Amino acid sequence: MIRLLGGVAALAAVVVAVVLVANAAVSGAVVTRAVTAAVDPGFVPAGAPLGQIGTDPGDPDDPWSAAAPPGGVILQTPGPSASPGAIGTLRVPLPKNIPIGPRRVGIQVGHWKTDEAPPELTKLVVQTGASWEGVNEVDLNLDIAQRVAVLLNSSGIAVDILPTTIPPGYLADAVVALHADSDGVGELSGFKMAHSARRGPYEDALLNDVKTAYAKATGLDYDGTHISNAMRGYYVFSWTRFQHAVSPFTPGVILEMGYLSNDDDRALMIDKADVVAAAISAGIMRFLSDTPRAKIFEKELVVPAFPSRGPLPTSTP
Image (cartoon, rainbow, N blue to C red; front, side):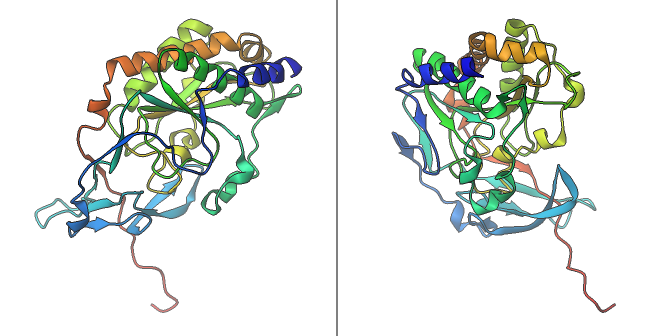
């Protein structure tokens, strides 16, 4: 643990180009686009309910009301000729402010500053991460995030190290959320990755590029068996549920770097943190090389809507 914290302190002194983003939007040069979506009859402004229900992957018995993201969304209902059961689509206008200048990447540190979470993320306050043999997940996540930032900075990439609270509608060329898992008994080993649904078309490419680089550099097996619904529905990418989430245009993935509860995985993430960080950085750089910003923000997104919310039950028949 002392070695880990020492690495964090040393790196913090040199990561001068990294912006630590808390609850404020990222500053920098942007380009403004004219937006005509607000005049569309199906336009729903930011935060307003869509009249649709979603399901919490971690609690399927607790449905929630989907809402429009920052910038709003256009609800397109099925036409009269649509087949029975059709649910329509959500059309997401291009963001008003699209980043220009150096490519930008967000590295989200799992469980960092959960005590600063806004009311809509209150459930996260008590989720402080795994701990094993005196090593806290959040410290490990932050250490590796800072190392990744140094490597990306050296290649001319602007980096935002993001805490639990994401700036509403955060825009970047890619976002990778870093975590380390625990099975509670020390048996499982390997790394896991996932992305969410109803997002842009480049999530698979980002996942595959990071996955390939990570497996090659670390030698860890890919643990596809234990990818949870909570990973697939990670709040950072759930833009229809939370305002403090990454824009659906920004490609994003969550990476569980290994099992903190496994002796070998833990040793890799602590003693060979530079190897882990280099692998993550290499995967991100490959993605950025293959995916120009112009493609990411090329056109509006059209994604499936959620089922319509039915009438609330009453006490009378």
